[in-house]
Every structure is written in C-alpha cells, then in structure tokens.
Image (cartoon, rainbow, N blue to C red; front, side):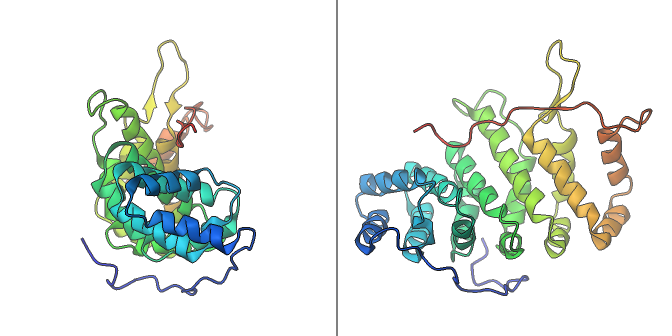
Length: 296
C-alpha cells in the first residue's frame, strides 16, 4: 500500500486548521475524552468512542487532539472500537458543517478509512465507508473531494468495493445487507466527489471505475422488481452511481474522453433512465435507505 508521503496530485490551498475550537467544553473535559481514546484499556477506548458517536450536537470534533486520537483508534483499535470511531466521524460532523470540514482536514484520517474499508469486514467496513461518504458531503470546499481522490489507493479501493459480488446469504448474519450498504456509501462518495472537474478526471483514470459504475446502475442488485410491483426499484447505490456518471459527463473534457474510450456508454445510460417512446423518465421507485447508524 502506498504511503502518506506519496506525491499529492491535488495540492491543497489550505493545509492547516483555520476554524476556532469552541469553548463550550472545559479543557479538562476535552483532555479526558482525548486521553480516553489513547487508553491502554480497550474497554475505556470503546466507551469513549461510543460517547463520541452520540455527540451529534457537540463541538468535540473541532479539537485537534480528539480528531488525531480518533485516527489512532481507527488504525489500531479493536473491531468494536473502530466501528464506533467511524460512527463518531459521522455524528460529530452531522450538525455543524465547520466540524465536518475540520474532520476532513485531519491528517491521516482518509488513509485510516481507506485501510478500514480495504482490510476490515462486515459492519466495520460499512461504518468506515459511511464515514468517508459523510466527509465527501462537504460541498462548500472542493478540497474535500480532492483529499479523497489524492489519498493513495482510495479510488481503487472504492472500485473494488463496488465490483464485489453480492453475498446473498453467506458471510454471516446480515452479510448480504452489509454488501448493499457498503456499495451505497462507496457510490455516494463518487457522486459527491465527481462534482469537482479535477477529481472527475482522476475518477475516469481509475482502472475499472466506469465498469463498476455501470454495473451498479444496471446490475440486478440495483434494479429489480418486487412480486406484483409494476415499478422498477432502485437502491441508493444505483442512484448514486447514475449521478456520478452524470456528474462526470457534465465536465466537457471528461465527457469527451468517455465518448472516446467507452462508445455508447452515455447513450446506454440515457436509455436506462428514459422511455424511448415517450421521452419521459421511467417510473423508478426508490428503495428506502437502510439504517446506517446503530440504535443506542
């Protein structure tokens, strides 16, 4: 796996935190949380990340030491601790967009999430990919997408996730549903990141990417018929895959390259989305999203 020191094709305009940490919490409270994340007692670590995962209205995510120590937990914690640390990434940035921006600028976080997505399995892998999707939703600064695309091996890992065969019944309890969830989140990352033209070019250059997006758009896991249902249904993964392709095609240089390298690709997507006789969108019905965070 490539190291963090590899050349970054997207040099960021902002390399340091410029948003003030709120003083709503005392220094001692913040220090207690930070120390709990670094405890040698794994029960203490797990209890601390569980606490953070419930802090949707908290500003704890603005504090550099807390964020740095969360990265440490994701890299080296137990399965349960990593699971809750990823949920904490989602929760801490859920209400306050400034917190999400600072989370996305945390050194090493994207690398840690990449490794968790690639190396972990089951609910932990889902949580890591969901955390990455949450970071990709920062639409106010393009560096969010660029950080994701410039993380060595990240786009390749997302292709691997989206290309994996679905587990219909094996892999333990919930195995098939977890495959659906992780593909949902991977496609959401690409949907959001593809809005940036420089990132769109990197996405297009990733081996297997267009094939994976096409499979999600038309594959049996993403478009299917319920018994007695007159409407085709789409999962979140297929919708996000279609939106990612649409975003790629919005950038003229990327659209030209798609037409050169994949003749008929965009036309095929148009046929999928539009009734050729009426010219109107097909009556797809969106599948309700699956729950992503645990019940407390």
